[in-house]
Image 1 (cartoon, rainbow over the protein chains, first blue to last red):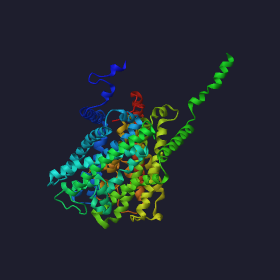
Image 2 (cartoon, rainbow over the protein chains, first blue to last red):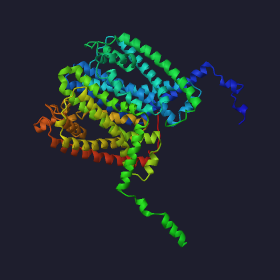
Image 3 (cartoon, rainbow over the protein chains, first blue to last red):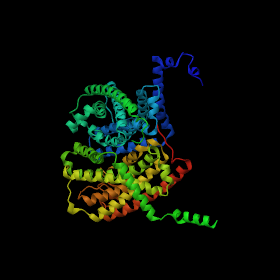
Image 4 (tube, rainbow over the protein chains, first blue to last red):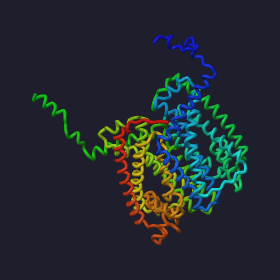
Length: 294
Length: 312
């Protein structure tokens, strides 16, 4: 095949073909988002075992926390706190297992160099991963929430539906923004990433107050609210979803926490972009894109 | 021709194909354990590894301690010992279950060595057990540190002179076998599934947590679920260790309103009952796990799953 044969009808030279319009760039990036989200959404139908392991079993784990409160004869809203926490766990696990470690995993599989060499913005890949993962996590969260609410008779009392929805979506955007930052960092840290993921589970559950009001942790809880999206989002949602019950004080109002989430989203997205640029430059310079198992 | 035949008979030693039985099994197990430990521990410096090993069990314990404190306040002091021992021991379960399953996933999906390990002369299950033991050791360290923290910082009442050593030893040995058996069952599942099965062992452990009386007595569960709990060797293991270590009035198996109390007329099982129940349920689970693993192994060979790589 000769060189001229490669030139398309629209462009007169390879150089001209390489100069893309805004529309071409946008469409390509949207395709990348859809392409990366597709295997996650489609994979749900192909691997049925996740229905049992990712939905039924986590529901039982959430139930264990409910029974702790039942054994202690706790006020009914605490069962609601646990159910809400159990539902939000799905998103956190998705962020750390299917966002944070994913790029490092892709490197081990040999896909990372293909991503970097493809004509798209790398953020599109991350966004596609996030959307696909969000779909999986939302399914699990919804099932846990609905079943647990029905089985344990949780009653929600919401006065401000709009604010609750806003807080929920802001929690998700900040969580997945954090996931994008971690994805870049974990790629740099190599195989320590897998182990560090372990550290991001129970310790984060504890400081975020996943099963109890985070205000009970005092300064530690305050620190979590200012740093961890799960902590601040969950606290705001609990305040809004159980408006009729006495909620332990010591944390900001839901509106203030929504503002904190906005700031977190902006900061995490900015840092993820910066981290990816630095990482890409380092990876290209040091030739570590295809270095597996490190 | 006679010379060539002689050379051939010298080169081929038929006894080597038969292996050396237990010696080979022991050697495979030790090598796999060493390999597993290296993979667990050599990724970082000892301090970070230590923090990593204890952060998870300590955090789990603190979650439940805070839950108890939030509701009961200082009046629930005795319950704290029950919760601390239950959650500390649970790190054994988490690491024991996850160790074997993750070995399958790591070797197949990440290092892509499973097929080579499988066709090596070593027994596949023995290699997996060896790899899993390393992670159990990490879990044991976490459990021990958490127990020490519980006594030193959280004020758990503990009298070293009151430890029932025979019960502790028997319960620990039989219980660990049962935990590893559950791990074998999860490994059998992970051979069949895709890369995302990383979270399956934790999900399974979370579900077992409900029916083992680790942090609340089985008595608070509905009767049919209590039956499942009584068939669960982990519940008897926890009861045995708790009875051996603490002079606590709380029982995970018995207690007022429990099925155990209804059937036996007593509020808590004695040491002999605990050991017998642990042996019986542990044997059942171990046999079921081995059968399940063999079936999974056969299906994996049949469908070419041992060298598949997946992703999403």
